Image (tube, rainbow, N blue to C red; front, side):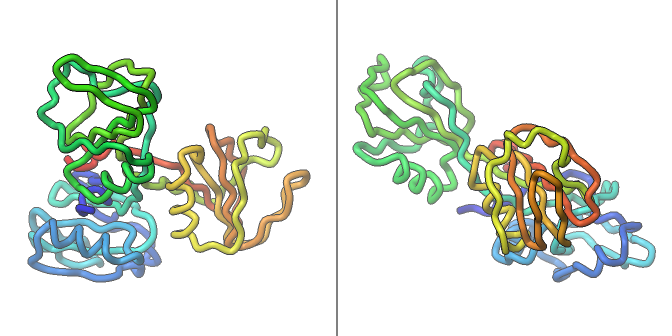
Length: 276
């Protein structure tokens, strides 16, 4: 999969020079004189890298160093961006499928972005085909037969793949699927409020790393946020939560103070936006 599908660009930022030393000590590596494409490949090939900034112009951050054009500086953890018109930030992200029910590419739309058609495959096979081809941004998958004048006849289990952006038209015989990239916005020292309605609890997973917890959340479209335990905590009526527990929710968070935990909210972008 091409690397742009795994990073979200944040223009005109770098790691804040005034961020705590602990954040700057999370630097994984500093590469000079490399292309942006090479920097993206380094980031997406290394699970320890959470984000990096890439220099377009010269910059000095007092106490942090000098950074030249085509320098890339890689970090673990989550970013604390500071304004830097000389640079851009890039965040490692996860790939997720977003489903749009009862649609297909509109028959009167421009179909020049059609990449291929494959017949008699499962939905999972269709996703694998799309994930393996960086030119594919979306597809529709047939549940029943359909005819689109001048476009063709489409049978159950047919998948039609496209680049570009979708122009959905109503099609109760099919569903659309597009690639999204997922990142997490960190909210320090909070968890779901113990006195809130926990009916949107999806699941609890114990003994996972933060990276694994984020991957679990990215792969489940029902999950919108989770909190991750750094120290033990008991919430009356809700349970006891231990270090490396991740607790997942749908819907919107209602945070309460929790110095033992951090919360992470899902950010999704269609790949055509993440590519830009």
